[in-house]
Image (cartoon, rainbow, N blue to C red; front, side, top):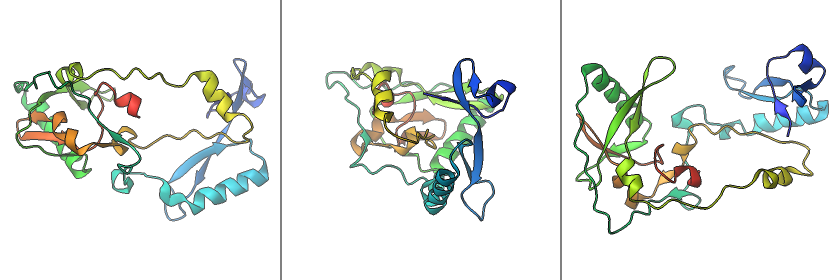
Length: 225
């Protein structure tokens, strides 16, 4: 499978980088009214294929999500995340951890963003309660995570293996074009099953909230995705 590179070098001009075929990428504006809405396509495409691909992307530009308001989510009949909680395990209600003022402000900011994006809702009388954990991001800002250790411990691991690389490569055989799709907020496009939403509840100084969409941190979220 060819490696895709963006920045051109002398080696890339020759078509090879570290023994791998390299291809320049070209940015294409697919919404004529907004120069920021761009996607990348291969720069070495045949002119006819390039023109047809650009026309296709422009025609269906409405399927791309650039923010949470444009992200309708995946219908429940196509994909939904369920929690296989062991019925004999007693629900755990973690005691709320107290943070300093900086962390409390950061938590409130994250909660407000999640509420605005309709990713979470208020939860009433949850049986499972987890704490939030603040993690420093590379840019120095705070990332809010949820400690689902207890909930994950009560759920069996999904042992279904992902496809092997040879299966993935064979599935591309015979095709002229290969596209790499980068899903916007991919996990959050999958809904939590309504019966399991309250199990994802977390506590802040403002109250209880639970996820309506699949969050990071759950044991089998990766398998569902």
